[in-house]
Length: 276
Image 1 (cartoon, rainbow, N blue to C red):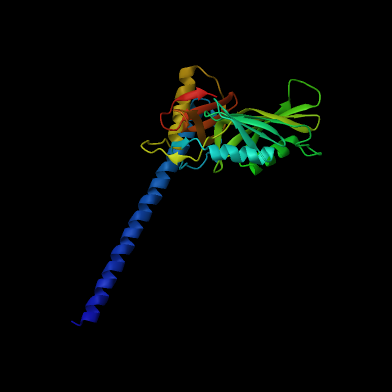
Image 2 (cartoon, helix red, strand yellow):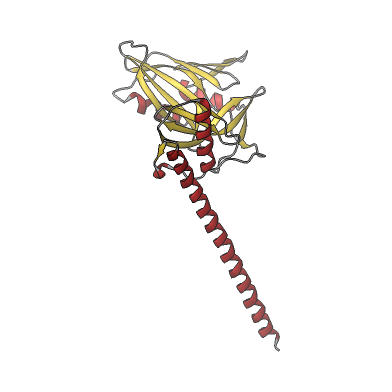
């Protein structure tokens, strides 16, 4: 038999084998997706059997988030100070780094806490909604965030606060928040601030729970804790940021379960449940 014919036969055999393998892999993935969806819907039914309602349409996709760590980035602090203060100069680093600029002053600690005090007229609202002003100002300065609460501060006339929550790659950092205080139509301060201290990197070594497991752990935690809720409104994956050693922080994967009785959190690795 000529070599060219043998070569064609070999090619046909290899193509057939590859096609078979691709079909096998696709079939396994399809079955895996089917099993996963059945488990998710099954978890919702278990909730309902325990008198907790949840709309299947509110089930989120599975997350690819992993536990992370971060190290303090002082350049990031200086950049935030520079963006909000204009011509900021570092003035101290004993216990906390402080900055002074044309528009006010700022401080940062290694645990991620920070604050700003602004000079009169630094950031007038000029008719802008405070919530939109707060998010645009901080996001433009590198503190990407979403507004979670607005209200009157201490019932003082002409005073409004906006609370924002920091995000990282569109993922909420549940305990990284800041309060922006507005008085008489201008921003006067940022207090109660907490920020991610640096760029996260994967910590590795931990298996994370899928959505079905999170819901079942939530149900178990609610029952064991004696909590009463009748409906799960939403389920959101994010991080809880915890300072560790000097200049380091741990980002723990958590799921926020919003219910009619308030928010709960389920640890994405251990399954521990706590009321947020």
